[in-house]
Amino acid sequence: MTDMPGLDTAGLARWLAREHPGLAGEGPLRAALIDGGRSNLTYRVDGAETPLVLRRPPLGHALPTAHDMRREHRVVTALHGTIPVPATVDVVDDTEAREVTGTVFFVMAFVEGAVLDRPARNADWTPAGLHGLGIEVAEILADLHAAEPEALGLGGFGRPDGYLARQMRTWARQLDASRSREVPALDALGTRLAAAVPDSGRAAIVHGDYRLDNMIVAGPPGSPRVAAVLDWEMATLGDPLVDLGMLGMYWHITELAGGERAAGAIVPGAGYPAFGEIVDAYAARAGTPVPDLRWYRAFACYKLAVILEGVHFRYTKGHTVGEGFDAIGALVAPLAEEGLWISDPTR
Image (cartoon, rainbow, N blue to C red; front, side):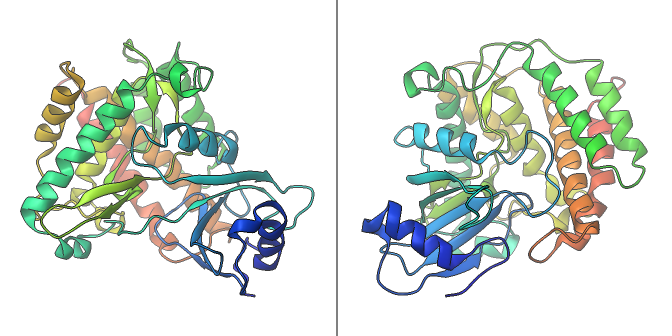
């Protein structure tokens, strides 16, 4: 059987045979790391009755409160049938047995399709198709925010009161836990945002990292669709405009200095709608106008910059698996500077 860093496939085969014999299959398991993630590790597993996906925390340094597999499993399970998400299989605490990963991990069904994580991926679809896909991305987000947490069993999934102020404190702590160098613009952005936290409206289920390359896309060239929304590790209950701000930041990330190193297929001329049209589509689906997003878009820059600084920290310690981590740290300062420009009160 083939082992990958962080995953014992022989142990996974034993666990499947014992706990989910209907999925175990008869041949050896084969695992491959799915590229694209810069946080939790995601593996495709073949050789079972159907292809599976296993998610586990990163190797080595892990930020406090991050990489919670149980929370991710819980929200994906709850949302199945409400918006497109994979079907889940199980969540396991393997920290004592150390049979499979030595961590908490969860298993879900593999969803066929493509991840639009770079401009070359756009070639499989027409510009009109990609335009429609962008509108669907906005509408799915509105549907997520319209879902009633209590009805889905997620009533206690988060603490909406004081969510934005708590987010600022959380990400400031995460930054302190990942410091390996000075990034003055990032500290300045955090100070500015913390001093101007807006009042939140109705609480909703928040994805926390909502972007096109956290989705599986499938369908014919002229009408691609979102087959699954992935990477729910930061999901909670809170201010839904955080998701819209994050989507706006990613909609333009390839335009930043160093942004070509970031995952993203949304480039001028591909066919995707402008972000203003995304906001309009979201508002139409939600049935409510969208307020000024400048704080939320600047917060998105801050949050991603802190995340990438954590990835850079793990890279410097040799605790990353896969390619592309050497360039991640170069995007932190441009993101912080973009956040400062967006949030500049004199603009």
